[in-house]
Length: 296
Image (tube, rainbow, N blue to C red):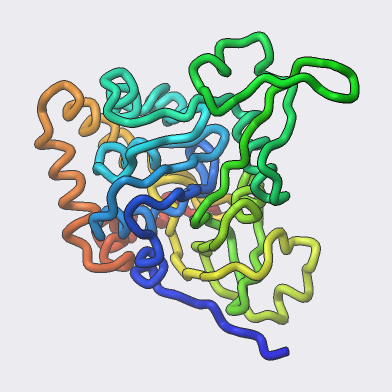
């Protein structure tokens, strides 16, 4: 069988995302988010996405809301931990009703992804029984377990059109390895029709074969080489998060939600619309800053 190479550029991978799709975004909190592709999606003017975040999503989802990309969000949390306990755009959009929210907790989100990964219409779940979640999310249905007669929740499958994920390295044939935590990335990959992976570096297939235990996902649709592709978030085993940049974002987002859009518009212009490539984005950040984040 002839192997097919799946290396793509950021722009080629981002062009796979179309208006109205359901898109999964990998990583967790302030780590391993596919930011290079997210920035290109925003630049492409994609709209009306249903965005499925990780069980605890970060400010990447907040940015997608603020930039007008997302119409619906499914996750248990959107924020930047101590930098922004709740994402500014996320908070305002939910309160104002300008985005739809698929309410869930972390376990229900993982159960929905697992149902999609296993090709099932739903999976039963005990968590959430007796809470308000089935009342505020009508997709969660009570039913009686036919074996024990117990009341359970039916959690519907949450199938992704595309999963966009970030990992340590991969080979040209779509074999992906992680230097650190996989978070919910494996579930998202299995729950998706197509899977795009940003990687810090592309390695030969021989390197993959030397450490087969590190291969967590294989046969993906696109491998996108993007060193520092998770910036301003961290990438496990490579670099730390850029706190100064994230603070700049949070302040701009807060100003926008309080009626002053100019700082956020300038943020979008400087970091998304003016750079013509991921490499130009890194030039804007600067070599000194990037090296200061590197994990030696």
